[in-house]
Amino acid sequence: MSLANAKITQLAIPVSDFEQAVAFYRDVLELPFLFSAPPQMAFFNCGGVRLLVGVLPPTETPQRGSTIYFHVPNIHDEHTLLEGRGVSFRARPHVVHRTADTELWLAEFVDPDGNQFALMSELPRTDAS
Image (cartoon, rainbow, N blue to C red):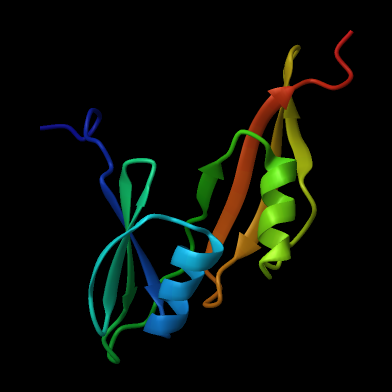
């Protein structure tokens, strides 16, 4: 068997404060809330991928390292919206790659526990000639 054609269906995001995490993902990021198994797990839908936001047992150390990228139609609008809700971005949206016709934009941020995220948009190139 190979995982080459396997679909990723769920990602786990370690958090330290269950209620704070639920409020951030549900109210700030506005991810659709699916269900919870309090006091340690809540599940959200993100484009068909389930996010498990959970408090680890006291004996486990959270592993933070992967960045989750949210593809959005307009990074500038989404950045303004989330910044207005108190999300702290590491930098304003910026171009990280250009093709002949498009620009790939990123804006990185973290949740209250330091988990890494980014907004990502592929937009028409503004200086295309």
